[in-house]
Length: 502
Image 1 (tube, rainbow, N blue to C red):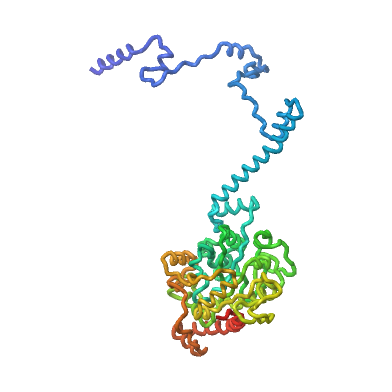
Image 2 (image 1 turned 180 degrees about the vertical axis):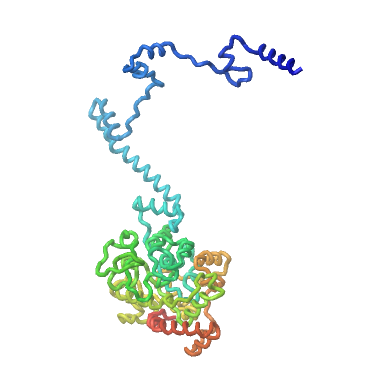
């Protein structure tokens, strides 16, 4: 049976063999999806290749068949070439004059006008765009403005010392239609950037990177400040004086990023190179007498106001932010007396007063202690910036009179509504502004306005203060607080004499 089966299979296989195979059939079976054709070689090409000698190149290679027709030449769109091509057929001088005026005058003017309208329209559409920050969009906008040499408005700004129970930035919360508030921008460069002066994060690279400001320089901070004024509003800055000055009375040197600042940003690119110092490891140049890392020409573009608070109130308040439970929120896990800032504030104040950046007029005092004129009137320079200094206790005791005089000194129309911020919008605005420095401003965020306190601060003795600190924070902490307060007290008392009187 096995042999019979094999014989049947062989018979079927033999019968299916095609004795005369066809290439067409082989490449196009009944199951093929498309028809294919056998390759055919042109007899002329074969004969030409056979006849060619070893060192002879076939004509088909030398003169290949063109794949497509040649395209016409591109027109020359340049004004000059278009003009020459136009006048070559002009037969009269009138025709030449017409073509000349059209091509050499009217067309360039129209092109410039259209481009100007396009740029103006683009700037108008982007008038509300933000120029501050380190986002890609902000960087591109700043680059485009610099490329086109468009100067940002040079607005008058105010810097203030922060040791206030209710700082001035909160007072202006209801004036957002006229004023842009910027909260402590220079801390970015002071603590985290490559030009940092503070030592708190010097050995904590991870925290510097996680802050998002590891690349912040003093110039980038100033660029962001000026960009905020692009909407035409006045800028109000609340910041800390010692962010601009090295701690421990170290000699100050101009920040490297500010040594070649353009005039539009603030300086003349040339400084008196009488002293060389170092800013965070980089050799740089200092200005005689200037206790800050900012050139004097930049400082003169700001309208400075100073706010002080008695150290026996501010130092314990700051200590509280560096111990549990607030330290986990603030990120400040130890108290550093160098961050009190009174010495730096006094030296900066004296430098500005002595160089005419502020003064000699004293705001809010009946008699100017410098030149003796009533109400601080200055007969030398009516455009000078008066000395404007507010004490926190005076502000809390008499908020409206103090704020009226402050607004008059800085050129802002006073509105009693400035002292109220009791809406959900106001509170959200405050939270957003204080987001960067969490834990330091909870009392201000939760407040609803600035009203005269019914009872002033009790006039306590140093011994009474020490006992209160010891009971609240322990004896070791009380000693540190007391020593810091005593070190700051002379500077506070000196500055107090310039304060606005209610």
